[in-house]
Length: 191
Image (cartoon, rainbow, N blue to C red; front, top):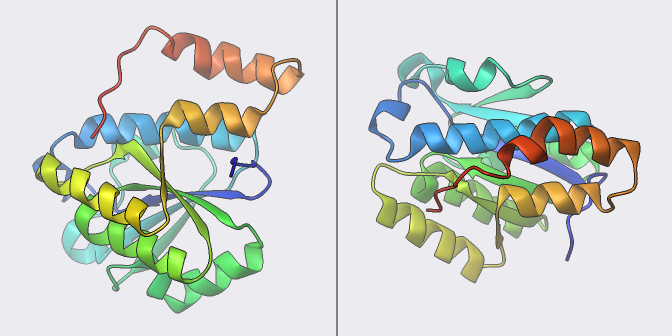
């Protein structure tokens, strides 16, 4: 069950400015999500964001949007993005079966979106270091519950290297120079 760049969507759930001040590890999660989004854009993997009731919670955090590149934003009122009719139709029309999911809050909107996508027959990959909640214990339990129901916990490095597939291409060399090599010495926190 390896990730394939031609079959994947990177889905970022509710990285919203109004939520982030209370999210434990929120800025680190945004950094990881943004890093993977850079690779996704290079490999033409669609990057989708959701915003839960942005009139109250604000839009997507400017720190994420600043370096995001090409993306699509979906507004939602359901906690699960998979319940929003326009989102559901667009995802089906895209024809991709793998969804790498991350965001906030892990135990609410990310979990419910993951479960809804699993129920709809998608392969869901839980981007562990880019998913957070107010309390880390809730993020951990959300990941465990998602995985117990069929999601697969992954790291951004796992996703990147599976998308790249091999090391002898010009694309790999470009991604390595711009994203992988600068990251090699960094430490990453897992939730």
